[in-house]
Structure formats: C-alpha cells, structure tokens
Amino acid sequence: MANNSLNNARAAKKDEFYTQFYDIELEMEAYLDYNPDVFRGKTVLLPCDDPEWSNFTRYFAQNFEELGLKKLISTSYAPESMTFKKGVQLSLFETLSPKYDADKTRTHGKIFVLTEDTTGDGVIDLDDLQWDYLEGDGDFRSDEVKKLRDEADIIITNPPFSLFRVFLAWIVEAKKQFIIIGNINCVTYKEVFPLIQNNSVWMGCTIHSGDREFGVPDEYPLKAAGWRVDEHGKKYIRVKGVRWYTNIDHGRRHQPLKLMTMADNIKYSKHKEVKGKQYVVYDNYDAIEVSYTDSIPSDYNEMMGVPISFLDKYCPEQFVIVGMAKRGAGDPALKSKVYTRKDAPNYSDLNATPTIKDVDGVLHNTYPRILIKKKLK
Image (cartoon, rainbow, N blue to C red; front, side, top):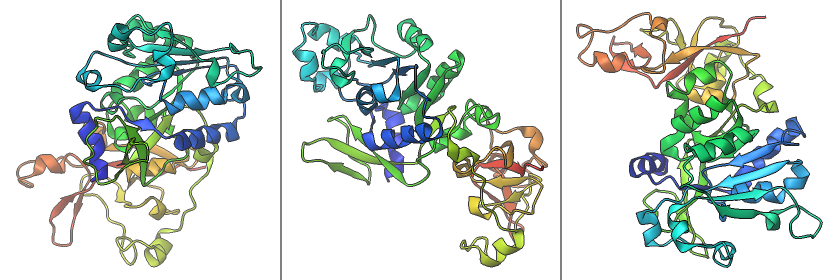
C-alpha cells in the first residue's frame, strides 16, 4: 500500500523523498496571503536538501526578490555510502565548477548561499547561487549546521522521515520559525503532542487528506501501490498521511468549524456510524466518541474524543485541546478507568487507547484520539 512507504523508508533509512514544486508553492502562498511580509528581510535555511535538485531551493531562489529575502542558505548531507557508490547523478553546475572535488563530494555536504546579484543581470535568482563544500558531512546535528540554524530566521524543509522527532526538537531548541513536512501520525508522538496542545506547533494550510507525490532516488525500490516513472526516467511514489507542520500563522487556522447540533448530526449525518445512532461514551474516559470531525456537536460542552485529523480543521478560538487518549503521549490522569487482567485478556491493549463497550458488553479499542472541549465564551 502507498501509505506503507513512510514505514518502509523509516525501516530502510531511505529518507530521500523530494517534495514537488507545486506543493511547496501552494503552501508558501498561504502564509503570504495571510501576511505578505512573512519572509521579508528574513534569512531562510533549507537543511536536509540536495541543493542541485531541491524544489525548496528552486522556489526560494526564483522568488528571492519577490519574497524580500535577506539571505537563502541551502545545505545537503552527502556521506560516503552505498547510495553514492551505486552512482549519484551530479549536476553540471557542480562537475563543471573549478571547486569540484570528487573525493569531497563523497564525504562532504554542500552549501548554497544566495544574497546578491552575482551575474550582473539586474535580478537575484537561481543563477546567483554560490556554492561550496561544507567542512563536514552536512548532518543537521553538526556544530557547523547548527551555526547556520542559529543564523536563520525561518527553517523550511522535508526532513528525513526517520528523524522527524529529532529534527523538530533541533528547531524548537533554537526557538526558530519553521515550515516542515511530516506524517500525520507524528502528532501522537510524546515529543510532538505537547507542542500541538500548547499551540506552539500546528498544521500547515494546504495538505489535509489524500496522498502526495514525491521524487525518489534512482535506486529507490518501487514497491508502493502508487508510483510512476516519467519520460526522463525519474521515479516518483505517492505517500499517504503527509502534512505540513509549522509555527507560522496562516488564515485557515482561525476559521471555525461549521457544526450541527447533536440531534441534527444523528438525523442528517452522511456517516453511517453517526446517522441514526446515539453518541457513545468511552468506557475508560469521561468523553464521547466523535469518529468524524464534521460530526462534532455544537451543543455539547463536555469532553470529546476526535480523530487526529481534527487538527487539519482545529481553530484555537473554538476549541481547547485537553489531551491525547493514547499510551505514551497521553496524560494518565485523564483516564476514568485502568483495565487489569480481570477485565480482559487484552487489558494492556485496552489501556493504550480509548475503549468502547458494544451492545453485547464486549470492549473494543478505537484509534488514538485527541480529547477536546468547546471553548466557552
């Protein structure tokens, strides 16, 4: 299945997924619509990129003047690896440069910097990028790249999927603004959810459902259900559950959800799990189960358990995030019951997430839920 691609990448440490230009442009336009000066006078760092091929680099270099950037920095990680030994496609930009060093290319990351018009054509754009080798391999955790992080105002990239927690902590440590890509399930991590709950991090604007296409290296195995090879032989896969994570404001997050009353949801809902049925109270949390974000009742003021995809529509002026109903990221104090072996053979699994008791008295797990309440005026 296509949504297994993230798990496969994590297991194999194949994290070189290249974001499409359209997806980058669409997301950045959302911040610009809300605040046209969001990037003006700022230094933007694009770590975890392959600058020759990165669409992040391309977007910000092409729009350098329009965005009003002060400086653009893009870095790559280039370790000596089996990936390189199998053959990495190097750009003419690099191989024709007098700086090109085959040995350094194997062991050193690269840095691309854009600050001024170096070609004399009167504009600052992609042709004015200046590049050099880094002293080290370009790992974002190195002191060298940390200095670049500390210089930057905004960090934007698609970090390695296997290192999302570490990368986000690396940004938060430096108290930087950011726009990065991750999987929706990252919100359930104990390192991430408290940031969501405290409104220090939220979902981006433009990706809410479905899947997204990413470019992958030539040697990447095409085992996903959704993949293609274009006319130039470049490989792409489709990945489900992709989201933008940010701490930069955009207009969507202040748009309240349009809600119906509990009675109207039961009468008119398009979901068979809701229509004609009463809302169920969890057996181990004092909250009702709301399986769909559009089924949140407008006239219920107590705690509700909603899917993690609720965060796509979350408006902090409308709701309060009380906690997470999931082992690890959740607050044990929110539970109204803890199961033991006497309750069920699978008591440990039942304690991991919210539990529902069916009409026959059998206990069933739900998916992890975000526990919310309406914000009362």
